[in-house]
Length: 228
Image (cartoon, rainbow, N blue to C red; front, side, top):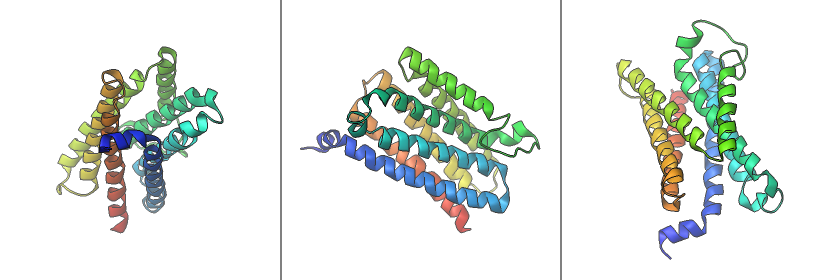
């Protein structure tokens, strides 16, 4: 049995392992950045933390609770709902990641008691719900793909601009930019495999690899900051 055949034959087990790694990474990032926020009181860190909080919940729901082993056995009628909830958490996580780069220009000195729900981020929740409802009505993932491609494209441009402003071209800004580019590539591949390649398993495996590197880059960057 060649590698591609083995991957396809064990794809559900690999998905669970993949999700467990990403969930663990998200948990570490959330706890570490929450600690960093309490020390620095930097608002951008709160929004960055929120992104991985939602990413972690999304992967937990989709790949563990929504595993075909469970959905087909215990709650087959909930598979569409689980897919929609997963989509919501991914989309809102993407919005928070972008907002962690933009908050200074938008809030302009405003202080919010909560970073999870305030007058500014409420718009993200509304947009996420609209995107999910559109995908649900038209039975597609097109709106999610387009929204995330645009989010990561803008985030890549902004993070590159931030990197150019730094005197030293290394450290967390560099990891941020590289991660945004990888996220953009992953979402673009995901859209292509869904719309043009009929969910080709080999290309999907490539998407998973890009996603893993994306999360590991952020983990490495966060741990590097905490270390110093």
